[in-house]
Structure formats: structure tokens, C-alpha cells
Length: 159
Length: 449
Image 1 (cartoon, rainbow over the protein chains, first blue to last red):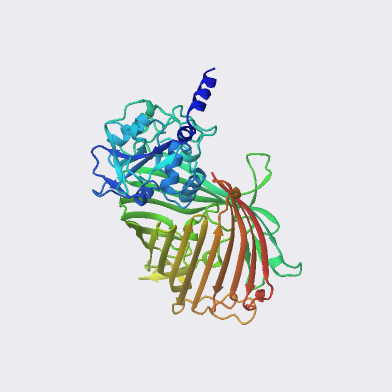
Image 2 (cartoon, rainbow over the protein chains, first blue to last red):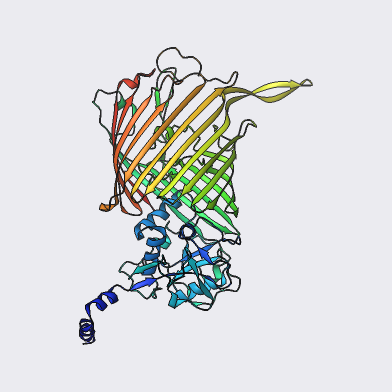
């Protein structure tokens, strides 16, 4: 019954609005601790951070990336935009890298609240989340000079 | 310290156990994720560090270091595409056989405070079946490791061997300075470091790599690091080691080997890496026998050493790897030269003709590989062209080889390969093997676990 009602409501919307709701635009904020010195990071730096190249920020603090679990919507989108890889390509990338004897992937954290607390407390920690999900312990940094909500912000995708 | 067996992409490929996705999106039917742990439910410790925390760890294990066990293996079927009369049917092995080639196990651990350790061992059927030849008589002797299994009813079994591929501990002072101590893969080119069959494109390494124009492994110290100047990364490796030798853990003289690699990498137009490498070291092998001498009239047991082979060698290499979307282009060129010391020349390996002493030599080889990963079951058709020229080795004529193959990756951890190799020799060689062209068809399944 509820499903039928929802379908009726959806059909009653103008067609353009239906399309907009079907593919909602989502942005991902790159988040660091409120106390972090990092203000801006380029997409290429972000790619290196999340491929565990061991880079440091401007103050010499080594980045410690944390990921969302594989195959979640935001993780898949982040990997596609930042690393340029699909989920399978990401798996393949890390298998090949570990066979080469290099370090493994960034750690994944299941719980968003735990992830954000980690980012807020661990020096150098960096991750990503939707702007509405940010807590007082973390803040968004500019990516290629743009904040979430700015036009042409690079970490945006259609859900 | 408990050991936790973790596949190479635990974070990428483990089944999901998390009840709460981060973004509120529904999880797909097969949702890889890290298992939910007590850590996710408890407050973070005040002194949290990257080494002490993973989403897999419980609060109690923060002082412990997880041991990752992972590895790869492969099985190859190889068949010669030559007439029955060709001598290659007697020389080339194993042919027309299913052969498990590599079974390599990695043990990796983050030891905390920027220390990391890695060990890789290869389990082998060898030395069973390995052959040695008597140069005087021409007899070929096969090693037989058959023993009776005391744990059963004394049924015959073959024992095999374990080869240490690498074992090192590393400390990172920063991205620019990392020190590795132990046995490591020589940092040159692409193929030697890619190393594992799931990670390399073809089935057989190019001859220039397989012939070790650079030594594949070294035991000693490696300093390496990199610096990122957006969009370029410049990196280096410096090595000090025992160098090439007949015994991994003993250098028979003080002549240490030095080497290095310098590379430039950018992601600005695809992923492009250009590198150069060098190696300079001495090789010294000797035999020994006990002799009795005297000192102050007392008999003294001593050892008399006889040089088997002694030379100085120098290798130079250059490599290029470019990945642009689904296109892969890679190539390496290597030159190696050796100069024997006075009294250090071994007998030349000459099958036919007068056997003299080994001349100083220079040999070089190069290969180029092009592949394109299609979306169809992640299939990559590839072609490789290689050339090896060793003018000072009479046994080996110039070799021009071409390989055409398919590299199929149905899942990230499994690779299916099939390739045909055409080899043309630029001369007969002193053994006459170059008179017969060599064509090989090989298929392989390689998997990471």
C-alpha cells in the first residue's frame, strides 16, 4: 500500500523533477582534523595519499588515509574520481602492489562515527564524507582550490 | 603474538559483516568490507596511532602486530610447436606437462614506529628432477629425492625445497629516506620488481631478465625514497650488498657491490614511469680443500683455496612504463659486461669445438611489450618483442623473440594467460641449437591468495 502511494506521488511530480531525484548529485568532502594544518590538497596529491605512497603534508606530518568499506556508494565513487579505478581495478591494484612487496591499502572503517572520530584525533588522518555528515571534530579541505558546494568541485557524482 | 591470515586485499575482497553502511546506501549482495569489531563500538583510546588501530583490531590488540599471510601460485602447461625431429624436443623442459611453477608465500608485518618486515619464500619441487651434466662424458644425471615416508606405510615420496626470495626489515625515516636491511629484489626495471605471476603480463620473463643481466636478488642494505613535485615524483634506490655470488650469505672477498635506480613518475598523462639503473660488483667463487702445513715445526691444518671464477661486472638499464586508460606500454633495455681477473677465468661453456677459457664479455638485451585491457572479461591481448645479443658467449647466438598472448583477469585475484612464442636465432651457436627455430605455446593459471 505504502509502495503504491509512493509510486503515485512520484508519478505526480513533473518529469524533470523525477529525473533530478532519480540521479541526485552528491559531493564528497575531504576531511581532516579540525586542528590540522592542511587547507588545500590537489587531486593528484589525494591520489597518492590513497594509494599509500607515504606522502606528508606541508608541515611534515605523514598522511594516514582511512577508507570507507569497499563497494559502498561513496567508496566506489571516490575510487573512480580520485584513483580513476573501478572496484575490481582497485582490488587488482592492491594485489599487484602487495606482490611487489609494497605496503597494502589504507585501512577501511565500517562505522562513520568511528571514522570521523579517528580523523578528529589521529594526527595526519584524512578521509572523506558527505558534507552533511561532518562532525565538530573534523573539517573539509579544499580540493584543487575548491570547497564542496563550489562550482566545478571535483569530488561530485550522481547517485 | 597471534598470526592473522589476511588475504592481500582483505579490505577489498572480504565478505561484508558491517550492518551499517557509511553512506546509508544499500549494500550490494556481495559487499566486501572489514568485519565489524569491538573497536567500532568502543571509545577510541586517548593515545591512538595509525599502527595501533585498524577496524579489524580490538582494543586489546593495539600493542600487537598483525602478521599478514598472502601469496601467489601458478600452474603452466607448455607445448613445443616444432617438428618431432627438432633437437628442442630433447632440450626444452618441462614440455607437454602440467607444472606448478611458483608457490610463494609472503609474510608481512607492520612492527610499529615506522618499522615493517617482509618475507617471501617459494616452495619448490626442486631439487627433485633437476639435472646436472658431466662435461667430460656428456652424461646427464637427474636428482632423485625419493624417500620413504615414515609417517605412513613407508610409501615413497619426493621431498622438495624452499627458496628465500626476500626477507628484510625496513625503517622509514620519511618518504625520502627508507632503509631496508636483508635480502631484497634488485631495484631495476619493471619485470624484476613485478616479480609475481599474477602481476606480470606474460608467462615467461624476457630473456634479458631471466638471464640476470642484473642480479635478481641481493643481500645487504637498500636506501630508497621519493619526493613528489606535483605532478612529478622523483625517486631513488641505492644498494650496498654482497653482490652476485655462489652463496647468498657469504661474500668470499671484501669487494662489495653498489647499485642504484633513479626514476621519474607522473600521472599527468596516464601513469608514466621512466627509470635508469646501474650495478657494479665483483663475483668470486672458489673451491677449498684441507691441507697440512707446519708452523714452528708443528703441523697445522689449513685450507687451500682455488679460484673457480673471479670477475668485475657492470650493468646499466633503462625502463619505461606507460599506462594510459586501458593501454599498457612497457620496455626495458639492459647491458651487462664482465672483466675477468688474472687467474679467474673459468673454462668456457662450449658444447662443440675447442674448449678454451671464458672471454670477457658484454651482453645486452631489450624487450618491448604493448597490451590493451578490453572490458571483455578483463582480457588483455599483448605482444612482446625481445632481442638478446651476447657476442662473447659462443654457445648463445643472437636471439630475436616475439610473443603474442592473452592475459585474462576474470577476477582481480585470478589471471589466465595463453601465449605463443616465436624465437629466431641469428646464428647456429657453438652448440648448433640456433639451427632449429623454437616455437612454444604456453598457457598458465596464476592466482593470488
